[in-house]
Image (cartoon, rainbow, N blue to C red; front, side):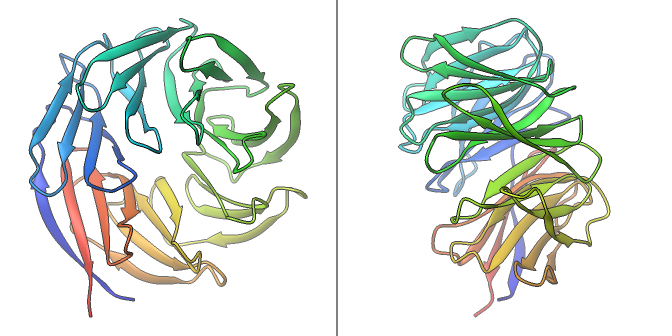
Length: 298
């Protein structure tokens, strides 16, 4: 496996710190960030053209998510804990979920798209009903802001992490905290379940593999020189892909934690990287609007 990075586009995002989320089919990129007129934009990955510009937020947009069917978008930011639900095709704002407790740093849809998780600066993870906007559950225990919260495959558990350095596992129905794992220090930026729903990746200053049942750290992936912003399994789960503020993307052997390749080419902090669905290329975006595609060398 060897990838050759090629810079594709410099998106005109008009922000000093962009956030990005690729669509499940990898054909579109959703961006937010700061700037004088905070906005959410949808971009065509192939052409770099802006498909929609969505105005509603009054502060920096720091959390973005797609439903699995790509019909809905969620965004959250620093404007009083507002999560906007948008129609991805028309750009229409369908609903605002407003709890006004703190900034929103994480949004994540359930697999069905019927529920939404939000992680906030007050340390609370909230579960919302998408159709009605009703608050269904609050998960309280983090001592500082939550940067990522995700469902497991059964949709019966939630795992979250953030500024307090802990990773917490929650029971959805009761809101009860099932386990607290002391993380690696620093702010947990991203979490990713293995398909066995027992192993879990986290990233902060480094990447760690955890046993969710015992809380044991199984493996540490050393190599990045700055905060790691995203981490994801390959389709066959033999490899791990990570993106960092050190402006590199790394591909790792998931069994040995050895770094197999370092991809360079971005001119700013990388905020997200994903494999395309065929595994033949890597898409990545940085905080300055740089969009890169790295092709597998045949």
